[in-house]
Length: 312
Image 1 (cartoon, one colour):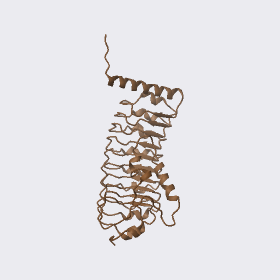
Image 2 (cartoon, helix red, strand yellow; image 1 turned 90 degrees about the vertical axis):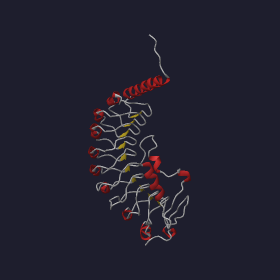
Image 3 (cartoon, rainbow, N blue to C red; image 1 turned 135 degrees about the horizontal axis):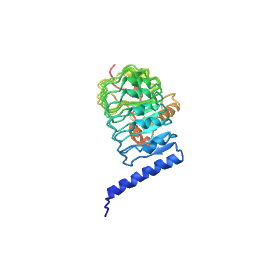
């Protein structure tokens, strides 16, 4: 009997064998990390469920349509990335992994984040970019350890009151949604806030309560009002980005570098900390949140004296 293989089928077979070999090696050596990115995996490899010492699992850029209920058996798993797959729903077993600290679900057609997300009480980093989300569940209030949240490029029009209660947040990006306002928050530790490309017509007064905020992005919002009084109250910012906002009566000087009077290196340290807090896997999801390249950053620095003709 003759067998015919196309280049595509041979490539698929080769990738499947590579995955099997990688899982087997991890099992034999009790590895803590398993990276299986871009292998066209469409079924969760069952052998992974036997890796009881697994700490980090990356299955990004594959073709997974579901995760097995038995994934809850990975009791030591702290970092999981399944970004850029085809997951339309999430198994309840995922939310039984109490050890999870970092979870990347970005670029999956999830559309609804189930209330069981509130069971992951040790979660520190959560990425939900471009998942089709229209709302965040109230149970998100249970994620009291959450340091980093990214839900960019979705259909969020408002934020639940419960999200405003998360005092541990340091990095938050919700750019590319339909958000019109920010209520009073308890984001007392927030350093990095990205609300670019939403539907704000004025800068929210709630920014005044974010005393540790250093980097604030409102690029591409249809701002009609920029209050001089509000700008003066934001003197603690190292950067306020108002590019492409259509506010013709505000002239903020563009600079590559920015030094606040009396400022120390703490701002730089905070920026580095906020960038580091986004690190999860080898995907570039978090890098989209950094405008341009770090070595040639075009910034809109916050210096209130440069604001001209602002509304009072």
